[in-house]
Length: 157
Image 1 (spheres, rainbow, N blue to C red):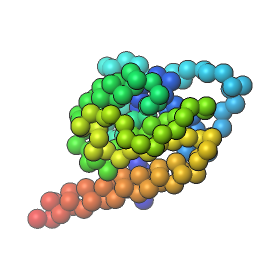
Image 2 (cartoon, rainbow, N blue to C red; image 1 turned 180 degrees about the vertical axis):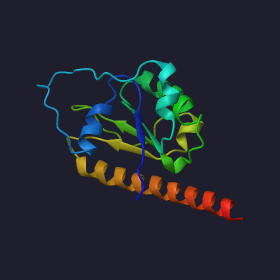
Image 3 (cartoon, rainbow, N blue to C red; image 1 turned 90 degrees about the horizontal axis):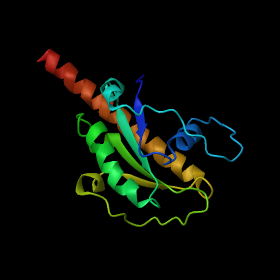
Image 4 (cartoon, one colour; image 1 turned 135 degrees about the horizontal axis):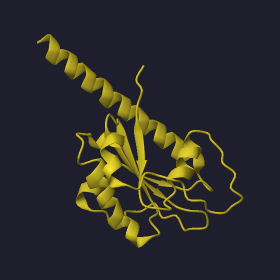
């Protein structure tokens, strides 16, 4: 059995905690008010966090124009620095309650446009997100398995 370390990264107030709680079947009642999560906001800690990660999920709010630019930085810091395959990366355009969900194309940078993209809306189609995320996890495990096989073959030969 593989243990996968999946990083959820992205701009402030993009929905990382909400999605992580939903996908892990964790429920946090906060009375409807926003409570910021204490993430790791210091770049000096990022190399330790990145170490041995199996995949990266970049979560952003497509209704916030600055998020489209910010996710380029998250890509550079958490994906480009590792040798992850595109299948080990995922973009989630998380639409907050009350926003209009458009499943169309977003104006993404070229290095981001080749990554898988999921539009999420927990009010209307929560199980679609869960199903898509499980598919992503399957891709991550497959990439891990293939990497392990290549490593074992290099030892044998």
